[in-house]
Length: 118
Image (cartoon, rainbow, N blue to C red; front, side, top):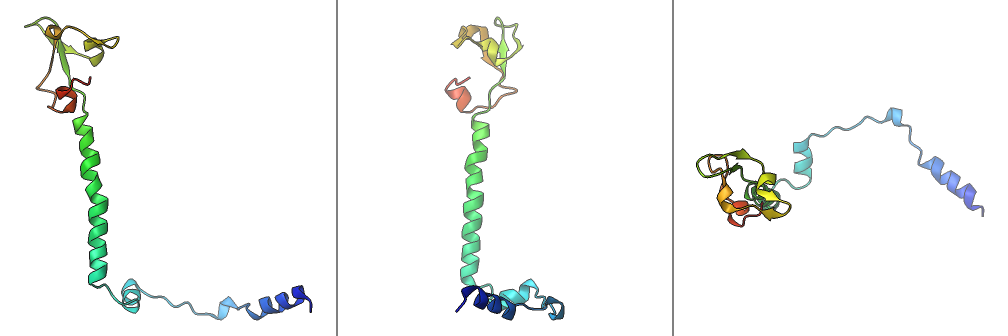
């Protein structure tokens, strides 16, 4: 028995003329009803997915506020002007604390200011 010959016969048997087939169109409601409907279990799964996907945003988006770099005012007391972070931190060494302060009108109180991570 020739294996190639039998496989060709089986391929020809399963060929279908697609021009004679009318496509059946279902809408979502019909498919949902056919699969058993939207019950209590599907509602629980939907709520769990919603909470798990959206719950992580509260933690990841708040980090941007906790790590927001403050604005600085530099210069002698009474005559301070806005300056960059590089003016406060010179070559990894923070200049004297009496020569700068955080501009609280344009900055927020967060981890960066608490731990002086600038």
